[in-house]
Length: 257
Image (cartoon, rainbow, N blue to C red; front, side, top):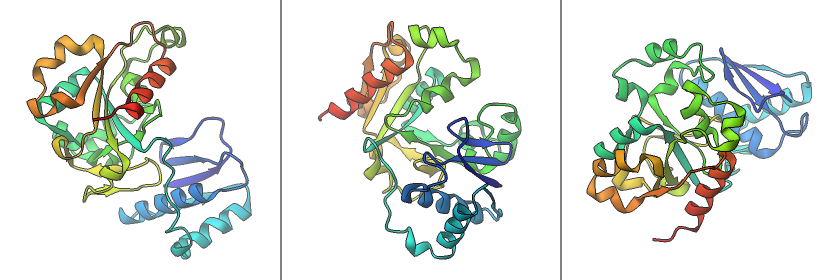
C-alpha cells in the first residue's frame, strides 16, 4: 500500500492501492492525524503489507517515521470523535436482513464470499477497498454523511436531487463510541473511526436505528421484538442530504432513554 500524505483536492481515501491522506493544514501535521497514520501503518503490517510513504515534505516523512519507531509518542492520544457516536449505513434490503436477524455482519459473512472475490467485484467502484476490509463492519463518525454516500453510490443521484430530497437515504445503525470499542474484535485502522470484525449482536451494542419514514411499511413488521424500542422512523420528505443528516444527528444527540 502507498500512503500519499499531502493536501489533496478531495477529502482523501483509498484508490487502487493508494491511500490519499489529506492533511488539513499541510505541511503541518496534528497529533490526531499522526495517530491515524501510525494506526494505518500498523494495520497494514498486521496483514503483512509494507507501507510506502510518499510526501513532498521531508519533515512530514521524518515525523511519521519517528512516530512509527516510537509508538509510545502517540499511544495516549485519543482518536477524534465529534459526536460520541459512530454509525453503519445500509439500504432497505440490508436493513430488513439486519433487523430481522439481530446482527450486523461483515460483507464476507453476508455474501458468503471471500474478501478477494468481493474486492474484485468492487474494483471499479468509488470505494474499491482492499480485500481484508470486507471482513469487517465499517463505521463512520456519527455526524458524517459518508454512510449515505456509500448507500447511494450504486445509483448516485444528481446534485439537484440531493439538494431537493429526491433520493432514498440509508438506514443508520448508531452505536455509542465507548460501547463499540468494548467489542473484542474492534480495530482502529487509521482509515475508519473504528471497525469490527465478523459480526455485532445488536441487542448488546445498538443504541439507535434511524430509518427514513418511507421505509416504514416495508420494515416495521420484520424488526425483532427486543429491537423495536431502538428503531425510530423520521420523515426525510423534501430534505436535502445535508438537512437530513442534521436532523438525524440532532435526534441522536438529544435522545434520552
